[in-house]
Image 1: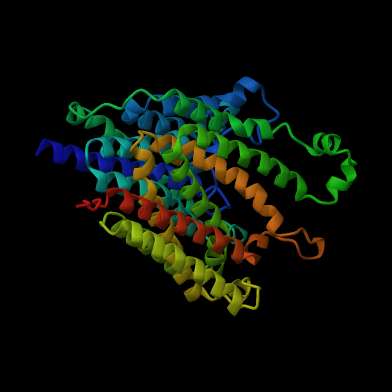
Image 2: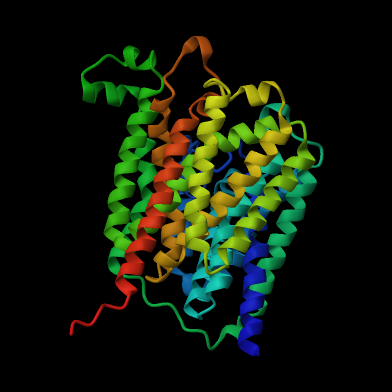
Length: 448
């Protein structure tokens, strides 16, 4: 009885703590930003290296203290609180060091929640672990649905939503700490394997290498003039993104085959999601209630499917379905999907949003057990996937060639074919892994 109670309370605490992640993501204008990778010194170039390293140090501490994930969860919430207070009372001044440190808070919370999911897996509560892992990405889609379109401006109740989710997150962290004694007999995690530790540290530090790259450096390396690069602004992010992507792939491979598979699928799913999510959110921009309900229902449907025994075939099938829907959308609009936005087709946008929310949640949850088997869920779904998405986002810029006469924020939505292709590849990987697992576990015929 006590074991079931501890599992239930841990699950509730972890899910509630994700409120801090939702509150933080309401500040972004990108549906699924790689905010673990972006917690580093991007945008802090005017400060000292010591100050810039503070958020990265917080993430590393969270990764290497997963044995005490409940306390790490509380620490992450506390670190992020000053910015929540500042959002509530803008007249209050926040020291720049506090603002820099606050960037580590949500990332620490996410890693600690993934640590809770890993602990549930170790305890044998696979359904609860899968549920928490799926919601870790599902709530990010819901946060994007709350915001909708940044170009419409902040909706009036944004601050109230942020405060409410922060309070829920704080309550989850407190509940996690209060129930520590109930988990005293849980199986402790193994010491992080050296290769996994190197991959984790490398994934956290890798984005720092990109911040020193500029047009002048690339021009010197390529032997071209800085002016020519300046006339093609997509070249620099593509080159930097390619470098980060290669590094992320190598680090994931270093962590082991199971971790590499999990990171590959999670990264592909999240990379494929930004353009269609942007299209769906903007199409339903003027119907916020339908948008929120659609996202919530999609995430809920993904969670229900994730805890079923048929999660793998459903995930693969849903990935194929979503990919085909994106291709049909591009074809039906004559290659200009932004027509959904121009004509304010909120019903179509809401349906697409629900489908994407369910697909993303389910596909990530379906592969979560793979790295969890190696005690690597937090590293795989946290910094490794985040840095892969960061690098991949830069590379995907080249799929939308720069056109000065027709250039805007919605450029990614013009190329749904790429998103559909990535989703289909992720679905094939899930189905292929399931097929290999079936062949390995099938009883071998006895030769007479």
